[in-house]
Image (cartoon, rainbow, N blue to C red; front, side, top):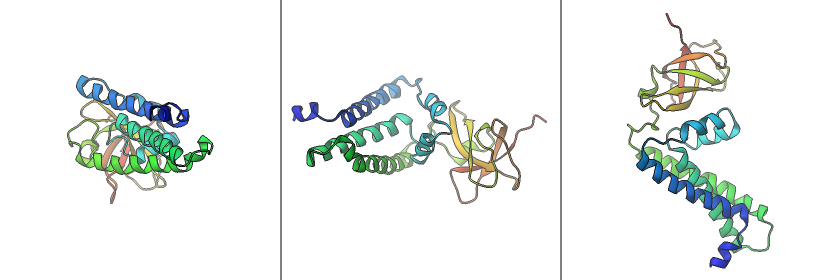
Length: 200
């Protein structure tokens, strides 16, 4: 067993080990209380395709370290399991199974975690917490088409990236503009309506 583990492809072994390390780090963060990875990670992935993926995977409602742990460990474990079941193929061939399996498991487990997390935690984004908050457009311009993204600081002082579009139909709000969240979009808990912020 140990020999099989040691001889596993690095393509799957290293992500598995990294995922386990993230799990340990999450425990440390939980007890430390003051350490947060979410903001720095959000800065790095904001506006990228990776950011879109993590938004879909509940980033902002579930701590990044938990999502990362789920994604990496499922990817690594699935790749190693398939490698052991169907040996002899090149390591990249198992990506066909490992990638969709890791994304699916992370999405499903993330949905469950988001539902049971205490609503007063700093990473739990709700309508009530976002209404009236000021933010900055980070992915725009905001218009009546595909929702863009804004960065908002909640009452805990933590930053969240949320999807948004203008409250006034036909208006356009450019990237970098400061806005105020006025309501949630009808029929959606994850898209918010905003207006430009004015100091008057």
